[in-house]
Length: 187
Image 1 (cartoon, one colour):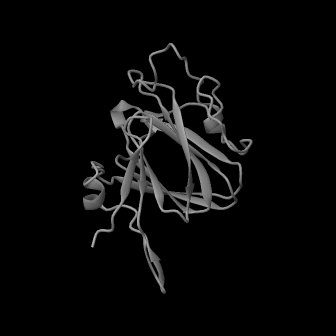
Image 2 (spheres, rainbow, N blue to C red; image 1 turned 90 degrees about the vertical axis):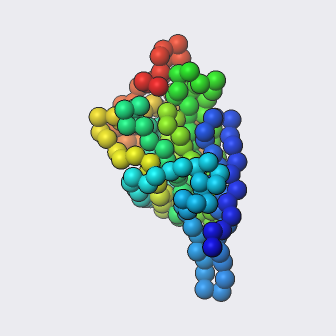
Image 3 (tube, helix red, strand yellow; image 1 turned 180 degrees about the vertical axis):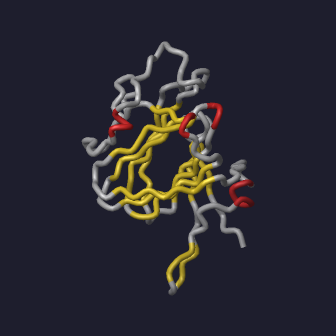
């Protein structure tokens, strides 16, 4: 039996919040993180190409902001398995009405909420507690040559992180600042 999900739109076109309905009983719980039929009924046509699992041991750590270019466009369904994170998406689609706008929400392992991140939208997160785990369900495989990103602290974007960002990777510090009048990042 397919358990119902609730899908909510956000100010960024195609960025969706998915609330799942886990089955709970005296044994524990079963949470169907992705169901092609159930999600498909809400217009989420995700063909799973890759599944990634991240572990972030330290509160305040920031990962992001990542995406792949049009030649390897990638839709992602982000799920928190342990802990609590501030999950962020930034619209980098140059023709979009919300170009360079961002949206953030808390993903908590106890709440069974996912974020569907469409193509052309960068994604990142900050651990709000120690020992966070995320599961990423990707619609396309990772391709090094298509990797793009923007800085988590880009003043043009202005993400309001809940905690002072720490433990940012060298790779993420190397992402460029955006040019608000530029052509975007290939989108």
